[in-house]
Image 1 (spheres, one colour):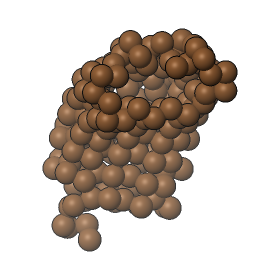
Image 2: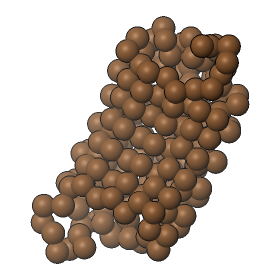
Image 3: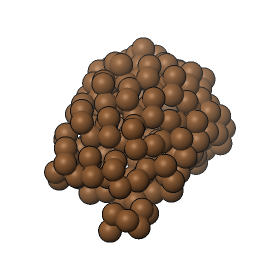
Length: 176
């Protein structure tokens, strides 16, 4: 696909169970710095290898990444991508069950222009990670921490304090 399209910048192959790391690697290698939008949500064969390839070949222009429910994605892959994808604005890591505070710290260090983030259903995310993100990513406009049982009122208050225009999706009853 990438080899036959010279203008390809936005790609969505969500819900395609046969799409894996090799496909993303080929796309990244062919498109180099032109890819700016990639959605591979609900593609169970996607792992950190895909994020390493995106980091190597596409990071400078990448603005949008959706890897929701790609359960093989971990903190290591997010850290590799975050170190180079400094223009990332949207990242959906929801239901990536290996994601923890380490990913939020990596995003906060490398992706300070981040505007929308979902870690919905990431059970390893806690107040510490969300607070670190809020301190560094003051441009954040939308944050989803639904079904993150270790994210409480302290983290949500930190988001309110540092990211004044941020809408927070949560199910923490003490913060309503």
